[in-house]
Amino acid sequence: MDHAAVLALYDRDMRQGARPDGTGARIERDASVVRQVGSAHGWNGIVWSDLDETTADTVIAEQVGYFADLGRQFEWKLYGHDLPVDLGKRLRAAGFTPEPEETLMVAEAADLTLDVEPPEGVRLLPVTDPTAVDLVADVHRRAFGTDSTRLRAQLLAQLSDDRDQVVAVLALAGDEPVSAARMELVPGTRFAGLWGGGTVPGWRGRGVYRALVAHRAKVAASRGYRYVQVDASRQSRPILARLGFEPLTTTTPYVSA
Image 1 (cartoon, rainbow, N blue to C red):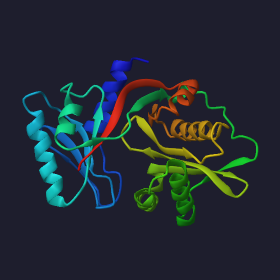
Image 2: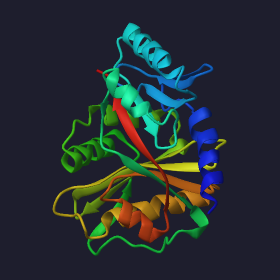
Image 3: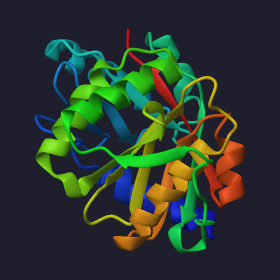
Image 4: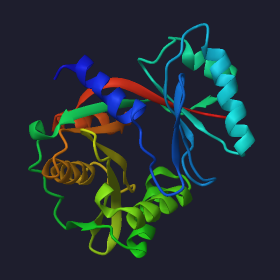
């Protein structure tokens, strides 16, 4: 993989060319940033920026004011190659709080190891209705220890708007949901995005997450997407590397006060 070329393509397709992620969201562009403005319960944030040492602080202050006028908390998604090099420091000085750093990992779907089955006794169930969405939200809460209200609303909206653009799946051990994940497919891009993969305590380390990654990657390849990308945590990065994913850069969410 030509890492520099793929990263540039990712920036063009997924950041500069970002699309709204659900009903009621919109993408706004100006010379310095691309931002998504969503509902109060949706995702609001900066997905791309073109800044330097002379413009960064002014543009940061402008975005803080813009979202404050809307009554929205927002996220500045900072990538490791974004400029200026001290942008994270400038965001912290402006009152943002960084969340844990993740690694943007990408693979060509055709090169992935996809002959991965769930562990014995576990089956995969497509998520297509509100009852299954509730199960996904519960798995997310148990896996990550965080509120899943926004995830539930987002997934319901995505399934209602266009089922072809989201693939969500549950892993069930018997009738017990033990893991869940989704994939977002953006028309006109070459990247399928893997999101939300989480496994409840007691089922980690058994190959469930690996099976969910392989399942979604197979779907992406069958629909003509060349690349599969994921923001990988420290825990999931080794699993993804064994499947064939390669790191491109880091990504850190900076959350406004």
